[in-house]
Length: 159
Ligand SMILES: Nc1nc2c(ncn2[C@@H]2O[C@H](COP(=O)(O)OP(=O)(O)OP(=O)(O)O)[C@@H](O)[C@H]2O)c(=O)[nH]1
Ligand SMILES: [Mg+2]
Image 1 (cartoon, rainbow, N blue to C red):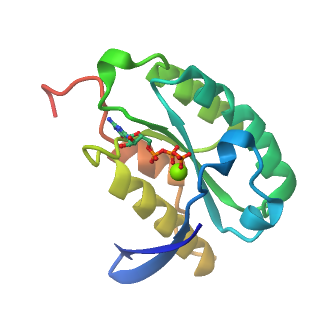
Image 2: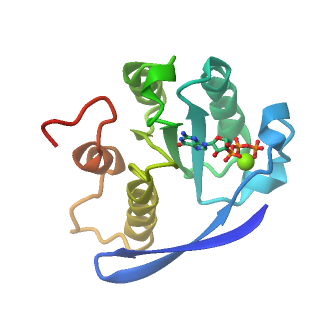
């Protein structure tokens, strides 16, 4: 499960993220609480071609609410956005769920890399902002940032 490092540059500062990936245990909902209790951020992924993966997200959000740190940064990601012909979960469904829980949302593709860098960058920005928060600093809004930077999977002629 542990670890891969990912370095992103935020406002000229290098931030090292230590990434833990579950090794499939999440399919059985048997990831131990200790495993994510200390995490500063959690990326919740579903597969846009798999309805049951989307339907599991609510249970995970409930679980996280109970066992993760109160101020954990959560991001919802709808992955496999490149597989548009097999899509069963609409972008709007992901957006609606994310809005309900107040978390940022992106559709990503691990295959093409779409929005992958952005997801890590947004989390690093949020964590850096929180760590160095100054009273007079403009606040960083991760949801607004993600919305302004994201690429949409549906189409492209205007991009
Ligand atoms: N087309 C496409 N395939 C993907 C994408 N992401 C993952 N895959 C494929 O989906 C399959 C499962 O990917 P994994 O990363 O192993 O998924 P996982 O949910 O972590 O699987 P476990 O760790 O075994 O539970 C692999 O064949 C990947 O190549 C994507 O964005 N697009
Ligand atoms: Mg896995």
